[in-house]
Image 1 (cartoon, helix red, strand yellow):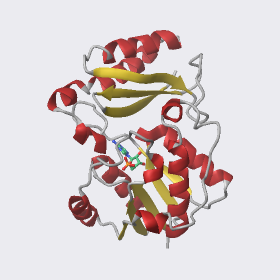
Image 2 (tube, rainbow, N blue to C red; image 1 turned 135 degrees about the vertical axis):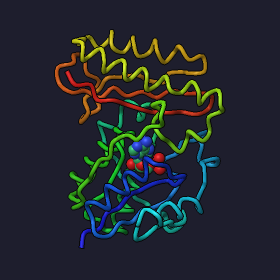
Image 3 (cartoon, rainbow, N blue to C red; image 1 turned 180 degrees about the horizontal axis):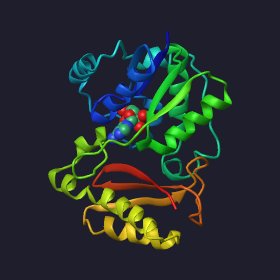
Amino acid sequence: MRIGLVPTMGALHEGHLSLVSLALGEADRVVVSIFVNPSQFGPGEDLASYPDTFDEDLMKLKEAGVHCVFFPSVDEIYPNGFSTSVNVSGLTETLCGKYRQGHFNGVSTVCAVLFGIAQPDIAVFGRKDAQQLAVIRRMAADLGLGVEIHAGEIIRESDGLAMSSRNLYLSPGERAQASVIFRGLSKAAELVLKGERVVERICYSVREIIEEAPLAAVQYLELVDPNTMKPVTKLTTPALLAVAVYFGHTRLIDNVILKP
Ligand code: AMP
């Protein structure tokens, strides 16, 4: 009997449900965890206001055919005396890791705990959080956790905006402009298809498109190796173009793999 785990923080959308259906295809029993993990939020981040749509989430998961929903309290995951932190070095130092101190420690620690509790044979993560996926893959391999990590493609709204629980924070004006992120990333793919290999030129074009939106503030826009997350200077092998963009207080991330 193969057990599949899909870790989430709730406020479920089609992106999460695509991971669930992937898990249902690979495992006999599927567990979805809903846990807003305090240790992956930094001071001043949106832990207190993180969207909570628990009743709707349960309905969606029931309809999807999930066998078990695990929604622990903070004390269940981090009981008194909890003293362990899992640190994956190197690939946590760039992109989101640079701007969200301690974020990936929180992510890898909670995933290690969830893996310990659920004992899954497979765990499914989305490519939207490409750095997180790489970190979890590294952790599972390094610690010999015996869990296969599977990846789901990025699910998007009709205008290309990557689905995210945080999209709920966007004002109508911000939401309308947020599609520039996907337009920018698509432009990069198009340039590469036409033969462009100069990283600066690709990044400049993407930034130009995103910054056409008056409400957009780019936090980072970087081309990195998809396994090490280190910046690449020449596009000779597939590379990950990853962005983080603020719309007001809402921070959105997205990415595309550029294949030369
Ligand atoms: P979260 O609830 O935001 O922590 O996300 C839980 C899982 O869903 C993570 O593995 C995410 O990468 C994945 N996920 C979030 N948004 C999407 C999306 N638009 N498409 C595919 N997977 C996603």
